[in-house]
Length: 272
Image (cartoon, rainbow, N blue to C red):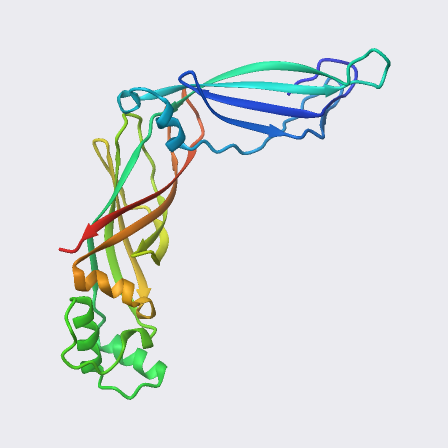
């Protein structure tokens, strides 16, 4: 913000109204308390989050659009000296126009697999837990649980061990609108049957048309093999929730900086 005047300007407030394709979707306000020095410049920033789910409820033909015209109508208030007949403040208005991509993500989980541990890994976990159990039989019990079978010899509850299990799956993100989704990595948290299972970041991202495929390889402890998680293996299906965040790259004429994008999607999946 530039101040061409020989006096410092103090601001008592700022309001921002966001309109997308002519429909107002969001308002924000700042209480002020900042000033711009005489003949100087100063920046005042605060974060505004636009929820796409609110936008596509208001915009007609949303799924057919690549870009959405966004207008920001702002007002700046400057307090005036307490002089009889003079208003308490004076306001200035301004307008900014931007384009944002039309994004309506649909998320699916595919290729969900969990690899049983080796006999050596089971033996080490049993020793750490102080369990005097045959490692071969314990591994058989864990393998049966992961296969959705009733263990032939249930010598131990896998949740009694802190044994890392290798998990792999693909997060499939499809944009049901036409805006671009391009990113190089994804921070994610996966919930299975409403229980948090793994948290991490994946850089294995590939683009296929309007779809983005994120390959995830991670580990989780057998302590997380609760009844809800084990139900996935028994039923060969389950519910999922994926919370993710990424920085998407837009054309330079739209933005030279990556734009943060977050999503929180639910669905169901099946095991192969």
